[in-house]
Image 1 (cartoon, rainbow, N blue to C red):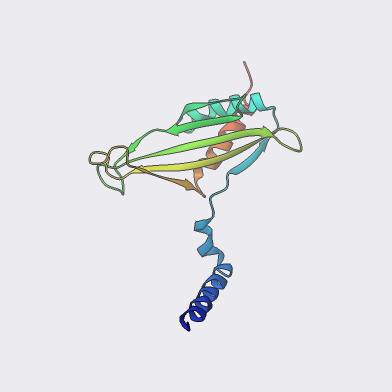
Image 2 (cartoon, rainbow, N blue to C red):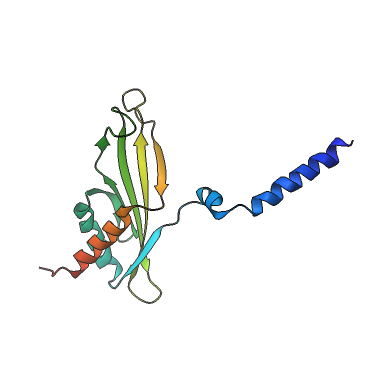
Length: 153
């Protein structure tokens, strides 16, 4: 019977410690949030610029459309690297398009890194990790802005 009060006391201390975790430790447990930018153009124009911008940053269109307000794209496959000679790496870009409250179109982007450690022994057995910080975000937004600013014709 003396075991239960001790168990509850230890559980209380453990749970109280969860609330006071430093942000550096708790950050890996929160899912990455999309990176957002607002462009001064309507949804269809912004989508068309984003679709064209994919080639500028080395991505290929996978699926989506202006009516769905979604765009998904994949980078080229990179073989080898730090994971080993038989490894493969690729990036997946997911973008959503919505009207911005102040006008224009808000573009929310999330980039995932897909890694397959040994593509010969375990094909299709890769991991996906959403990236919090990547130069791909800024490259994509810059390419959209450049496409929007380019003269049409």
